[in-house]
Image (cartoon, rainbow, N blue to C red; front, side, top):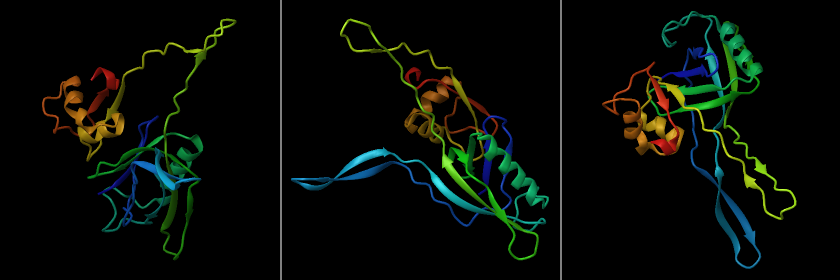
Length: 212
């Protein structure tokens, strides 16, 4: 299992040299508790929760037997890249290979430092899941007394996604459309004969959900 950050804008990829001992991802809706005058407390479904996690990574000063393949032992190169992405506000994909985890995130301030005189660097990342805000506009009708009506929406452009190691069409559909069972329709839309067989680097078109 490896943790990879991929810049959505530049498609640059950063494989962390040492995988932390664990991580947690919470999915689903929050639950809101309300105090009612007559009935007491009631629980109601709240908004969909976002992934918010603080993670610490070890960046060794040299290649070790537990580092990822190709690690050259230049920790501040990684620190500089992460800081650049944090300053630019670019959206990253947070990918955990061999799991369904593949989330759009923003990086908060990048904390880093040394502890034991070995030259190893410890970097702390604030990961905040990114969610696009859908703008709504209304047309106001003057002097008619009628309520505003929604302005016609432009047709959405078809998106795409580059498959990473550990991805499945089921997981891609669950993240993109909220319904993993659309995997077979997505496969058909992309001319994929076997919905269970995709490979890293393959580009999958993501049409609007209503057209599947």
